[in-house]
Each structure stands twice: as C-alpha cells, then as structure tokens.
Image (cartoon, rainbow, N blue to C red; front, side, top):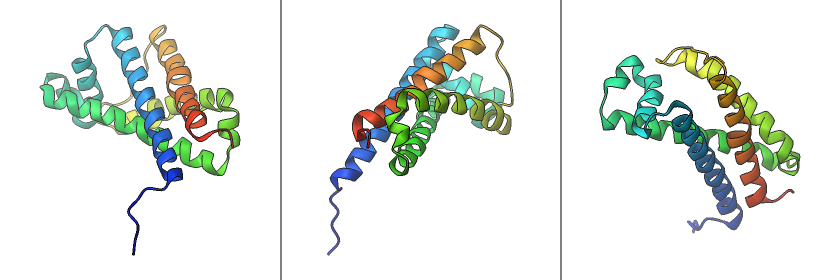
Length: 157
C-alpha cells in the first residue's frame, strides 16, 4: 500500500520553499511598487509584458493577475533551486548571510541578461538610482530572504 502522507522532512522542504519564495516575491513586488510609484495592478501588467509584450500595459485585470502570478511563480522557482541545492550543500544554509546576497545578485544578473532578453518584454537596463535599488532589492530582499528562510526552516545542517 502506498502512503499519501507527506513526510515531516518533505513538509519542511516545502515550507522552506514557500516561506522563501512567497516572502521574497512580496518584498520584491513591494519594492517595485514603492520605487515606481505605480499601483500593484500596473506592476502586474509590467511583469506580464514578458508574456504579451507592450500590449500587456493596455490589458485588464486578467493580464495583471497573470503578471502577478508569474512573478510569484518565478520567485518560488528560485527558492526551490536554492533549497534543493542546500540539501546537498548545507554550507549554503550555514553561511546564508553570504550565500543569500550572492544568490540575489546572481538572480538579478540572470533575470536582466537571460530571461528578459528572451521574453516578449525585451532587454532594458534601468538607469541609476533605479538600477541600484533593483540590485540592492535582489541582494537583500530576494537572495538573503530565500537563504534565510531555508536556514530558519531547515536549520544549518
């Protein structure tokens, strides 16, 4: 007979992914709203440009929701990657205050130079000070949060 119960370790891994991905997603989304001065629905449409191009900005609530869901799905994917690798290399969790910011910087580079150019949104590099705010946000509010959540939920070993 196959058991459908989730094992405690699997539950902790899922919790670490959810805590890191959803928290980082919320913080990053809030930074985008605060930095731009735009409402959340407009930020959602801006994210949806990756799927629909510039036409997304003229879409309705459905397009904004697609953008917001996409944003959180991406953050959950990044959290999943960190958590799963940290299971094999616990030093990532032990040194979360170093590995987290490095991971956040890597996420920024990957999103700006790989994902965006391949998306319908296309490549664009913000100018300072917006650039510095985005980099700092990814370092401290994405990477550090994901690594910190992994450490908090899974421990250092």
